[in-house]
Image (tube, one colour):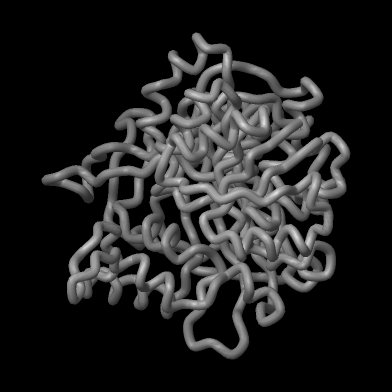
Length: 404
């Protein structure tokens, strides 16, 4: 398989590093706006013929399309901030190649009632074009990171094998990671984190459909495994809530809750109060800049924080319902330890954990275990073949029964 990797930030680097040992990856083009960054990753991998470096402007579909045609790639892997999703998604369609991302096209809050009604939902742009992709016989895989991605595979597995009736599928993300030497240092893209955490969270209920609520709503303490312990989690806008009900029809409720912590929540609230979460450009002394881009530029790059990070991160899917007439609750999860990730890949835990799903999905497509056409999420595919590969890729899953 030939892959055009658009974006070689933290997650893009992890994808490339993990791809090196996979012989079925014939070539992976490291396409970046920041060529110095791409060259840094290429040097780390040490195989320039198989991992060539190219300049790309992800804001321009033509730039992405030209590289796809130059290298005759089979798939475009989108590993940049989701503000560029439309352009890269369209470039793949125009170049007549398969597409994959880890976060879907962005939402737009309801103009008059954002905390009760949905506006433009995550992925709407992509799903509206599903018929065109299907007619073309090409596959657009949307939401193939860890969350969304692995968590959605777990949801499908639970629906197929663990439950007869499902009350709720709730993705729960938490950890005990911290960064030494910084008063505030996000472990993932601050641009994406702001988007997820300050937009109105979306919830699905079978009798109501999709609706929104206030940011940081419905706090609860969730007991995470492998020594992490209790972490307070809150509602956050996330793709799983939009994906799960499209394929798992017997679910009554779908939620996503994230363990942010009081300090992180307060920083996000302050950014919002000051308008620094705005992604639209404003004029500052004759120069047009996006306030959110300025915030991102002022903070340390998460890709370079691995040696200062300590602890674990846990991503997983909490499912409640019944089996054979008895109430049941399970948590399917994956825990990534930062020290182990740094030792194995030289990448910090959050970006490494985000990256592996994309590689497994490529593997399954390359070997004919997953196939299809159109715009499809992880729930559309048979889950066990994915889960069987997780340990081989260094990210074994766990499952624990929870109080029903």
